[in-house]
Image 1: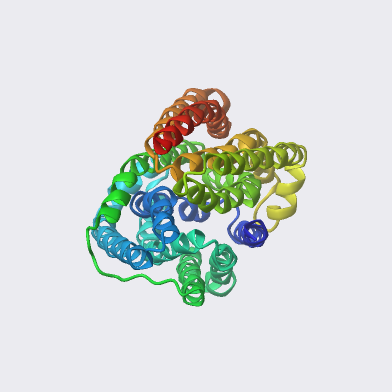
Image 2: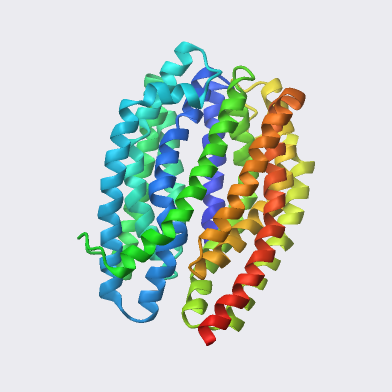
Length: 429
């Protein structure tokens, strides 16, 4: 189900990118729009994704496995209140200081382009409120193994952006696309509210610092550091791209979007659907079931990822030309995007497998080890990109990313093997 809905979402994402390329080309306006996500996404990933991807789901699943539904509802409600308060406070500060911060995001942008980036960045703060609630509800749906409406929500998000491109951009320019992004975020939330009601899952929006809430907050801390590093990596990549002239930020984002299609189609989809199974096995202290799920998930990931990477590399120019080679997106922009995509394909198998192995740790309620590994490999990735920037230009970005993710796999696999033995031995005792 997640693979099918991911395919739908990415099909619409390709239509979105094609429409953006046709309307704006590799231009200053589209560069500013793409870069405007850096600070709001940084805020969202720091305050929300840290809790949901690694901390909330295993604790929530553990409570539901033990049929302690009232405590699970209180946990979800408390995290919602805490998340909204934190997002509003930090979001207000980001709104006020957007101008000096955007100068750090894209130091290569000229003054007029940076002013547009500042305005769009402030605009993009609003969708984060919708995403906060939506992703908390999504974590509850994943825990309950309800994947269909969960998977449809990104498709509706892309539909909102597409509507903004065709209905609002002709009159309001790139601001119409930003408005469509907000509409898409609202749709992302609405469909998950509908499924939560159908599943009869509830949350009680009342702040209580129960042991379960404190456990989630404790598990969040390493993940917050890790996601801060991931966003810092994107920040550095954007800064590097901004120094290589008009359109480079757009070209880099498009190449990354193409590369992420096979990663999300089965890599993240498989890791997401595997997560509650691993968490359930861990809760039941069933090492054989946990190991079986993890090995099968890893094997399936590689069986699909390796040929997918080879096919995308061989067809990279055709793919870019087919999906975004239209309108104002000229032959030079197509060639630049295809070249960057070719290097990015090296990271497809390793990035997909990293999602699976990280969730192996999260299911055992360990966020420290995968985050520590992530910090090391992100440091390698950023250092390599900066070192190569003066030698290979913008291709240094995907090259550094591929080297970093390649290092991540042996480190995660070795440490996970040790941690599984230690965890299940302790629980058996």
